[in-house]
Length: 409
Ligand SMILES: [Zn+2]
Image (cartoon, rainbow, N blue to C red; front, side):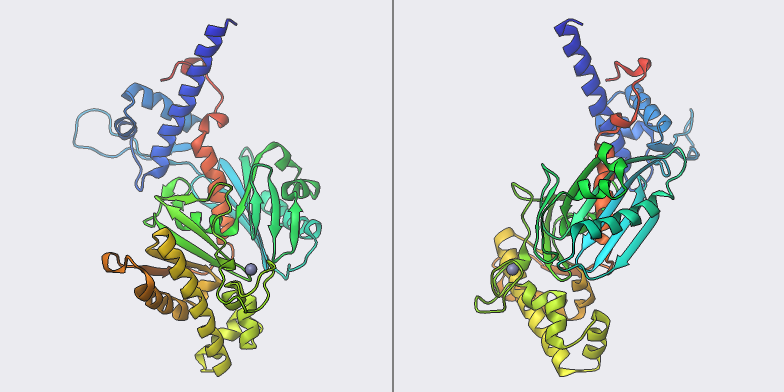
């Protein structure tokens, strides 16, 4: 093939990929099913091009056609399009300090299978924990419908990850360093991951993406916020215009190691007086003398002084850290996730109070603190969502090129 011809073919292929992604993203993003003509109008494509691309997306099982709308206008009624379910799936995996979770989700956001396991993974052996996670994932994959496609996996981890090398660098509360998570999962029985697109992210980033979406590719009403995910550790994720703001290496958001008091208790990170040592679940329970969150909540309701005091200490520390972050990063909406949401009755008013006092831009904005519905598997659900958005961003990977569509533009 001559060089000029090969460049022309490459351009056509990449144009087709770009246009397929554009057409798909419009259907996935819509709150209500849209018709081919809507896709053409919103993308600037001709009706025939949009229609041809949509045909490919429907034939391949990425989109589905619904019952035609009845119309008073002459001509054929418009056929509404929506994300198809049951064909393309992704695995959302989660390792947290006290919880493992797996969610098998399809492109419509439907969870086909789920597995959860509570445990105590501080100082655990990565191979053993990931072996357990692989077994949970295998159990979920047994529900994968015949002829369905597993497109990839994403794992949520409580630490710093190097996403370019798919390496967990450091998870202080697990005491894991330099762990090849997907290599171990493949060795422990998930060998199909070797040939799929798999990636990793901090658990707070994954949970934040879940809050920013109502389904894969579809934004929720929340587009700009600071998400706080609390367990033993406390992570944060900043979402701007519906997307994660990750920092150069993806390591932004370590609010759990914000210093509350330099002379405070030692932290797993090696420093002292970090936020986690006041508002992290383990530190909070220890200070209150309770063994579970449920017990602490019951004692708090009953007016137990130690529990009331420990929650006050946690809320004071959290409110201070959030107010500092809010001034630095122009945050006006704060979202409490994980265990922090379970203490919303104490944390929400205290954070609002501190934002009212400390946020310089306060006279011009109305800060809001909202809590998620507590769900230990939020990072796993967010991870599955992120993995499925890779399919929406490049559907051509899953559609064989047809002779008739080579020149689609
Ligand atoms: Zn620390």
